[in-house]
Length: 142
Image 1: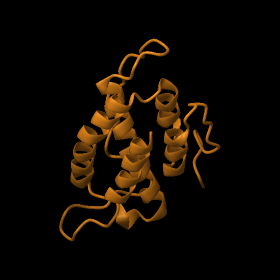
Image 2 (image 1 turned 90 degrees about the vertical axis):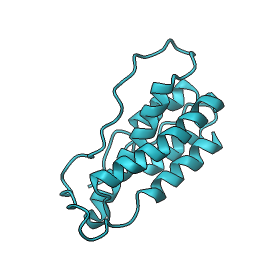
Image 3 (image 1 turned 135 degrees about the vertical axis):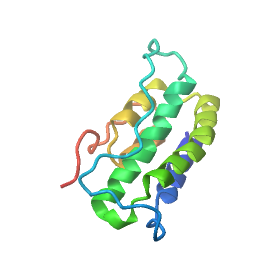
């Protein structure tokens, strides 16, 4: 789980910085994330290991959460859609490999997909018992 948390922190850092001049426009702070989550995989039975599609979904959600946070804090720092796609593609392979190798518990997966902040993702990833209930899951800061 520490490796998943480390990847989450790398993703947060990877999404930083404004787009170089001439590389597109910065989306409005009110626009939704421009990088869609991977299509939902059918849920597996209770304790079944996560599938590659579910791990990819976690990775995509992590990028979307970070982009949404950046959009709310400093719209000029939001990567362009092209940069977001590159970040997503780069992180997806490593994250999925780690997710599958570590056997991420289904409870962490469910918590992760409800998280709306980087801090909530970290709480989900850091919970060894899978019963984390971050206070900001499902809510947004004003």
